Image 1 (tube, rainbow, N blue to C red):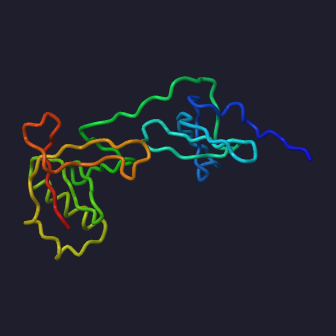
Image 2 (image 1 turned 180 degrees about the horizontal axis):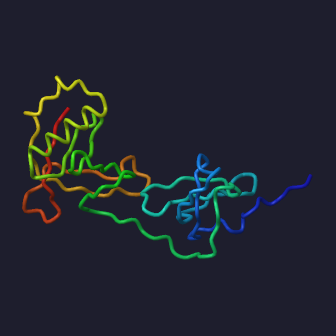
Image 3 (image 1 turned 60 degrees about the horizontal axis):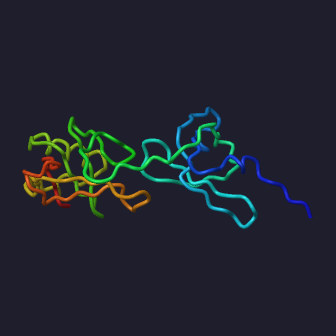
Length: 185
């Protein structure tokens, strides 16, 4: 019985810079830079590289010989993810959008709106715009339940269920606190 070594097996090492193209984009490749975060051996004598794309907080695995994975020459330490408190900015990958001109996110199982602003009218406009966009029964939306709060956003560890969490009971004096409006659904 003959066995063959999978292509690129020797290149799949922790810390190698890569470029990744999603299968849906292979016809007109869009390459995303990243790094091999870890490598798991397979029973067949190959391995499965785990990749984290730059700017993302999660990793995913790929076949070592996947045509949408290009191995670059650079190999170095895997950069740590930022952890701790942060001030949100528009970032669709991490769930922060601009809605009606203000920063908007949803939290919890019900998708409670959280609007980062000190302007109540802007917060209400964002919630109404979002509600219309996703098909809420707008007659059932009670904007009087929206509350101004101080919140602290914190990054979670890599591969956590949520890339970030928010504490809605922060003090105005907390140096990481931002003013939000929260509407429990």
